[in-house]
Image (cartoon, rainbow, N blue to C red):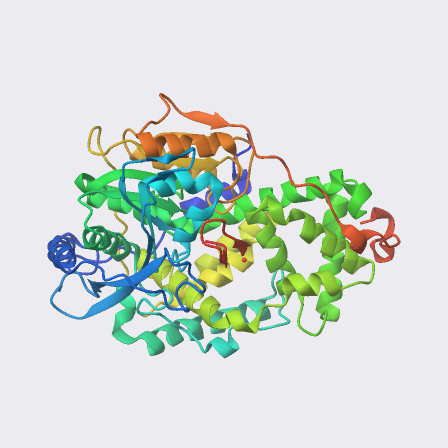
Length: 560
């Protein structure tokens, strides 16, 4: 196993001094949190009395929902310190437990309650989750549990956030310099400031209430609205973070919890430092991908070494900077396409084939992958706004551009692939107009929780493996199952029978391994290029020769 390890030149970045935490009385201070805890109890009692009136799903929530999937809403306080004040509405979807044993149609199985799912993001919706019950591997779980998804605050129709006009969200072609000029940096700083202003202008005073602590409180209100005395929860990626917050804040309300692709809950990693570590991990995953392409040079003809593959990618970037493919695909779109491959190995063949075809004079496969669908602009802009608001609100960030410039310049020397792209995505947090939270210290003592099942892939770049180890250390009694030498982000639903066996044993019987367990990786993707790489050699390569995946649980594309 080679976890995402920072090289010595990059390791010092984690010593960056952040802005001061909020003073007492600000969001996240002890007095405020006590009031918010009381407010959560009030809101949960109210939600239990009101329940959820489930009916047909709106097309905007779950298009073409089968008859067994129903939708409703639950009301939560905007500000938990004032539960009697303004309330917002979250959309919820549910497929009731079938009670049918798929191995014996005559046998009924006992219902075990509701299984609530969140896919992460921040900014992703779980409304599609109940559809997973039709997948054969999930039918035993669907027999025992109501499958419940929801759109967290800010997402979809749950009091949606917006920071800019969706019509302007997809810009292309765009550049993506790995070592940007000073002029380019000034442009991105100005853009980050404008984006932060747009969030404030379009969301007003509500903006400060979109954060991870409120996501955890909303989860407890949803639990009560579903009539559950204790929560069974499955969280992926960012969903593992506020799942861990929930376990810390409401330990007696927890029945079972699965944390898939756990992020690092250390308060010092939320979120500035964590993004630096993530950028370093993507460099290693990008190297894994290039090694795979090189091993399949007979198919892709991009070079027999990772360095030669990298040269072909660089040539493509240079050519797209000079002339965008289809007038819309520039270096920024190319980088996005290959970044997605860092999340999911299943995308490797299509990306390698598209690069091979482009360098041989056929841009169509790359254009098909890289040109955004305008029909998704509203959802993508909303997801981006929620991501930014939650991360910016959750913790202090450096407010001096010189700190960002110093740290990312140093890191880009050894990890250029994703470093600056990640920095630009988060830079609005340097100029954020809302008060910041102080991150909660995720930590539980022995016996406070039932066993928590943590699942992680060793080479996951989006949620580096060290985060799963830290989560395991902080949640006493938790058990870690590792998919060895694997890097796809999202272990659940990935077709690994060993992982799925541990998941089923835990959810259906409450069994966890006696000690930390490991599973062999799922098979590598099969190299397949079809006709796109069958043309001649890459003439321009000289002697070298060369942000979204479809989530299995949600049916929607995303990188959360």
